Amino acid sequence: MGLMVGFVVGYGVLSGDSLGRVNLLFLLMLFAFVPVIGLIMSIGFIVSGGGRGLAGWILELPILPPRLTVEILNLGLSGSRKSWLFYQTQVLALSFALGGLLVYLLLLLGSDISFVWRSTLLEAADILPILRVLAMPWWFWPEAQPGLDLLQQTQDYRLSSQTANPPVLGQWWKYIFAAQCTYNLLPRTLMLLVARRRYERAMSAPSIRQGQGQPSRNPLNRLSEEAVLAPVVDAIASPYILLDWAKSPDFCQTHISSVIGAPAEVRVIEPLPLATAADNAVTTQSLLVLVKSWEPPLGELGDYLHSLSGSQQKFILPLDWGEGAVKPITANHLNEWRRFCGSLSDWQLLQLDESP
Image (cartoon, rainbow, N blue to C red):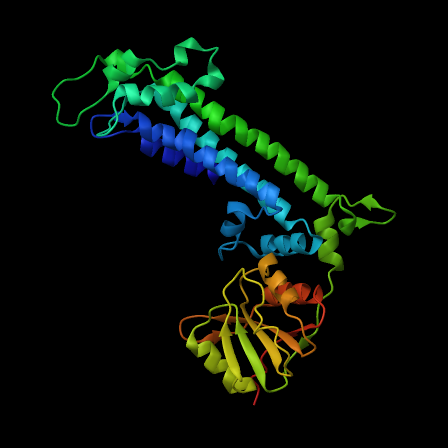
C-alpha cells in the first residue's frame, strides 16, 4: 500500500502544471522536509516508549479479514503489539519512499521534467543558502550542488512570456535525487532496521517464551491455541453504568435498555484516555463497557479497562448493528472478544438474551 501511495503521490507532484513544469520547492517539501518531520516523530516514539504509529490507525479500520484481526489480538496479548505496529509503520514509510523514487526514475527516463521554482517573497539569493545546507551530505557530488546561476535561470513567473533554456530546466534532477536518498530513503532504511530489532527483542521477551525458556518459533499460533476463552453471561446486576466506548447510535442504547433494563447513567468514552476520577469513584453499581463487535480489541481499550479499579462487577458487551437495527454478533467476533476478556481479570463478557 505504501509503495502504491508513494507512486501515485510522486506522479501527481512530478507531472507538474499544464506546461509540465514541476515546482522545485514542492518537491523538496515532499522528498525532504516531510520525511524529516516523520523521522523526528519516529525517534520521539522510541524515546517516549510509544510506537503505535500510522499502521495502528490504519489497522483500526473495519476492513481487515477476520484471521488478521485475531493475529493482532494475539500480538496484544503477547505484549509485542506496539513494537510490531511501529515496525509496520517503518515498512509503510520506506515503501512510500521507494514508490516516490521509482516514479521519479521512470519519469526521468521516459519524459523531460522541467524543474522551476516560484516565490513572491523570496529571491534566488535567499533560497541558495538553504539549498546549500541541504546539499551538505552529498558535498562529494559537485554536479548535484546548487548554484546561483542555475537558480536564477530556473525561476519561473506565471504571466511571463519568457522561457528558460530547456536543457537548463532539467539540471535539478541530480539535486532532487540526492535529497530523496539522503532525507527519505536512507534514514527510513535505518529506522526500519531499528524497528525490526525492537520487534524481535519484544518477541523474544520472557512473556512469550515457552518450555524451558526457549523462544517459540510461532508465538502467534501458540497464543491463539492457549488463549483462555472467557465464559459468556447473559445477566447483569442492576443498577449499572453504561460506558459507551463504541459511540453507538441511540437505537443501540434503546435496545440494551429493553433487554436488561435502563442504565443508571450513560457515559460516552472517547478512545485513548484512561479512566477519570468519576469512572473510578467508589460505587456498587456494575460497569458495562459497550464496544463494536467487528473492531478488534486493541491495546487502548485494554489500557482503559485495566485503569478501571473497583470491586463492582464489570462487563464487556460487544454489539453489532446496521442501519437502524441491532444484529447478532458473528461467532468469529465473539471468540475474539472471549479471548480478549479471558486475558483480563475481574471482567466478564455479556451477551444479550433476547428470548421472551
